[in-house]
Amino acid sequence: MTHWIIKQSHPGDSTNEIIISSSEVKVSRDISTIYDAVSWFEKNALPKFNKGIRRKKLRKSVALKDILNIHNDDGIRDLAQLRRMVEDIKTGSHIFPRGIPNIKLVKTKDEQPLLFDGHHSMLAYMAAGMAYMEELPYMIIFDKAKGYVEDKDIVVFYGKHAEDIEDYDWKEKAINWQAAKERQVCKRVQKNMGQLFCAIKKRMDFA
Image (cartoon, one colour):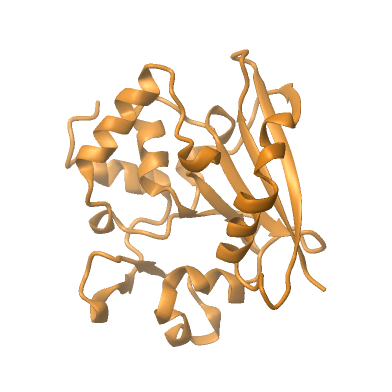
């Protein structure tokens, strides 16, 4: 039986501190996708979030620019929201809708973090000057035994188009929910969040 680990991390009160906690979710008939696991966490494990273990930040955390994205720049439409997020972050606020991190990732078979939810949020943190994962709140999910999420579980992020992705080969594909249905799955243009941020900067007044 597959068990997913949901790990949460967010900055602590000290600039050199983070708070981490984790929950274990058993895959079942009712919890069969990553989205189901996140929903289960919101209902059952959220109260434990702020009771996590405090530890010092790592000197070499994962760089935000190296994180894999699932949207191209044409899928990032709400630039006004992005600007508001940047201002909130610069004043010391963090993005915690419903009390959990808006930035959600999975660990792929290649041990790379893939962002499946919260592209606007991560871009806002990058625009506010953040460069590493431990500087922001996030949630990451992976298989307890394998240490990563299978490709067959990643294609769920493409919605109804998942069945059209042959052999679960998602790596060269992006999703744009703003496009017409027949054009929602498209070729991946920006290969990581660094490239996506550079593309977004051209449309905004970020330094």
